Each structure stands twice: as structure tokens, then as C-alpha cells.
Image (tube, rainbow, N blue to C red; front, side, top):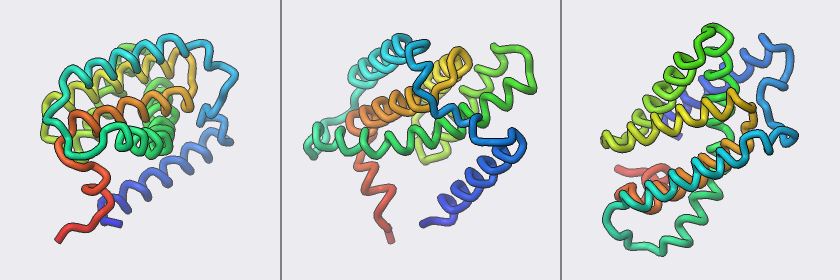
Length: 181
């Protein structure tokens, strides 16, 4: 594990337990299924439009089997998506929302934070930054409307899977999980 990844994991755990301590329990995680119907349609439409956008801007043809790759990425990103939604929505968006009464500022701030984090993972593409910002804004809106980390995490998994299998140049799994000299 690289020092950067270790630092991120430690920062995430610190923030998670600080939020737990300050809120008095785990309910802030919003790992619920009772409110899925509140934003299910909007989340599905956003995920479908996002997927179509990603397909429309796809880059060079990959030298691997796309369907198998996509399935692997969506499965992996289901866990990463839920973890990221815990951090970005249950912790960041809800905390900003508790501090600032202006929903527009909360949503824009959350979207910017999401985009800056994702840009920090080595993407040099303006397009990726804009797509990350738009996704961060939409997920913040959906979270504020009906807090549900599971639904938003699944949406993140689908969009990340399509992006990394169709647009991202190279093999993201190989880049993230193999050591380079």
C-alpha cells in the first residue's frame, strides 16, 4: 500500500470515527433501504444519462474484453462507491449542510470537493473533472432529498465501471493494484 493510500485510509477512518463520536452513533451513515423509493427514479435517470454520456465520449478501443472488464469494475466499485458515499455524502455533505443554511452552496461545495478528490487520483483530463463535479452535485442533491448511501453507491459503481472500461486510457486495475518500478 502506498503512503498516499495509507494516508487516505487513515484520514477516512479518523473522520468516520469523529463523526460517530460527535453524532452519538452510526445512524449518520444512512445505510437504509426504507427510503429508496424517494430518489430511485431520479437516481436511475441520472445513472442512465451518465452512462450514455460516457459511452458517447468513449476513447480508443480497449485491447481487453469490455463486458468482462465492466463487470469486474462495477463489482469492485460497488464497495468503493458505498465507501465514497459514506465519506462524501454522509460525512462531508451532511456536515456542510449542518453548518450552512444555503442548499445551493452546500451542493456546489460538495460537488467541488468530490471533483477535486477525484482529480487528485491522477486524472489530468478537464473532462473528467467536469464529469466528477456534475456527478458530485447530483449525488449531493439526491442525498439531501433522501439520504441513502446504498442507492448512491450503486450509481457510483455503474458510472465508474463504465468510465474506466470505456473512456480511461489504460487498465485502471493494473495501474492501482500492481507495483511499478
